[in-house]
Each structure stands twice: as C-alpha cells, then as structure tokens.
Picture: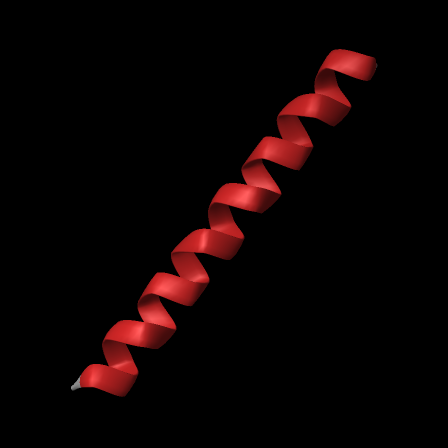
Amino acid sequence: MLFFLGVKEKFLEHSEKRQMFFFVRVKVK
C-alpha cells in the first residue's frame, strides 16, 4: 500500500509538471 501511494505521488508530480510545460508552451505560441 505504501509503495502504491509513493508511485501515485510521483505520477501526480509528473503530470503536474507536464501540465505546466504544456501551459507554458501555449502561452509562448
């Protein structure tokens, strides 16, 4: 269970970074 939570946290962090990157790219265009 703890391992699963850790993976979920990493996944959320990664998706957040991707969203920010996408947002920045849209703003630049």
